[in-house]
Image 1 (cartoon, one colour):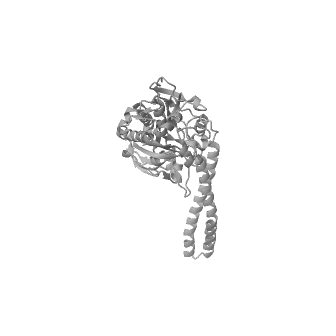
Image 2 (cartoon, rainbow, N blue to C red):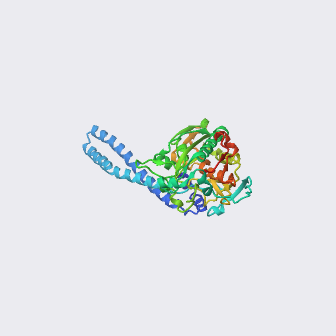
Image 3 (tube, rainbow, N blue to C red):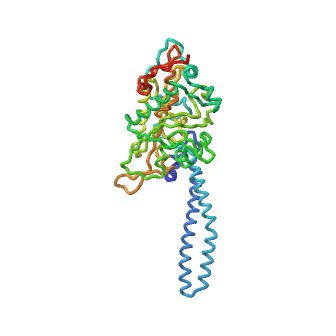
Length: 426
């Protein structure tokens, strides 16, 4: 949510920031609604005050024996009472309309975010590792996987497209990756492990900017719950409505959960293989910090995600997203793109975003700085540390052997019970 006070004080700056995201100016409509709402609120407050004063005056008039005045005041109070429901309803309507208008406008980019239209304008920050030279033609995971236990056909029969049934050592390798990520983020990077709900209410989805704009991208149950598109929703919402102690910050949370996405906006993209699924696992990272610490925390979180790729010896590059490719709630985003030799391309495997106070305002999550009476909104950050399915794809393609087997990365040895290679079924 945007700071209405800031928009009032500098509407030109607000519109200029929106222009960097190719969004039309919005301050005019916002301020018109704001002025109308404030006028109605003032009218309502004046009516309430007059009703209170008139009610007192009735008693005084009666005590003085002035029945005519008392009756006139009673008639005035009755009229005010009759008019107030319409004023209250109008006040609620304008407040809701103003909130909805603000809720559908994307976050403002930080000044150091490059301006651009789409992913072609993203800026490469760094690369790590060198793509392997294969003595044979490297294949895509969708070609290697079926013989190793990545069963697309069975999943399609029972669930439809964009689902996969993993079997045997392939399922074990997938589980090992998730457990390794969770252990690395808790033991090495100081995140607190959580096991949150994967079904949440509207308030949690709204607070983490998934509603109302992206309702079609998520699944909803018949009783009104939402299946989380990422544990960012559950972890960030765990402080919804709270006033945190300064000493509680920074708060770093992680969870390995199932995630669910309808992929409504991705028709035709990555329909083959394990890249873009309706159901997938992800090790999520969430930080809740003081405003002055959010930039450093963003670098720290991204490094925590990079550490997983480095431990697995998977080549990748770090990209700074431009204004046109950044997510709705982000002020700045780094994407990590892993090298997939079967595709001869770098593909996204983690996205780490600083949302500033955008989500905190939607959730009304604040903290009280030491020695101060006033509260302030926290800053929230989220990232993947990592997406398990996409990491499995990267391991399959980077560790593939000519005979169709896949070596198990050394970092996963403690999780694989002595299995060092996933071998095709005979």
